[in-house]
Length: 354
Figure (cartoon, helix red, strand yellow):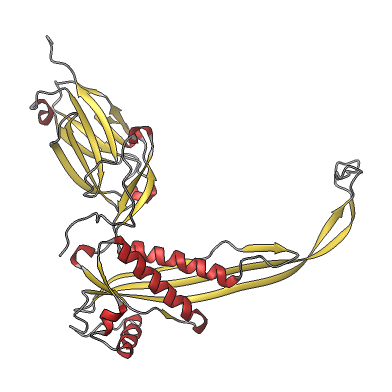
């Protein structure tokens, strides 16, 4: 069983560190909402489609998802050949259909994998429309500028008729992760993708509806991937998202860079994290500025519903004064990542007589 929160091979992305206090971009780890740590070996079953014309794209969807999960490094992703070693293609097809209908798997049906991933394209629309439009033709002067009447309105010299072409696509799909031993559905996620329509005046757009549908399938594979595996997401953090405060009054924190030694405690605050951090695991810590050992450490799950006050931790000042030091640093980590994504330096008042 794997227990680490942040696998090293997340699509080869590297954590960007340093300068966070200036609002530079970094990466946070987004964790899916299921106990993925308990499942090391997973198998992605052949994709299915509710409509025949989407059959080939359903295979593309499952293949792309398999590639993304393999590159992620969190799971050992079984190949189609490894699945066939224990089940025939016909068995796999029946299994996919049964799971899609919500039927639980017989216990111990597939022992080579701990979890099965099932994808299905549930709606697939190709849009190719042509509309005749009449547009005004304006009178122009010798320099090609539009002539205006006495009221300042453009003078219409006639009308032109053109054909306006519109290409689009709509693709909806679902993904499920099923415990191979019990048949319990661990993840059930659906998404609908509608790429921006392409418009051509006088001739069809270069991108066909099939091209836009393929684009939508690629987006679906990424959406399903994020629902299954922990991923890195690029965010921009600002310095005031991590705060040292003496107290909280009338909806505001009394922020400070220097704490009086007479205080019993103080507040370590995380607030206003971007939307991409929703439901992510984070960790705060305090340490001496040049020290390696954390003096205080707490974990939490971020939620935008917390409000502008954010998440605050009341820290006894004795944790700092016991070190005999004066300069300290607050650190924010994404999950169990070893390097902080945000830092805030602060100090204690000097001892009298120094």
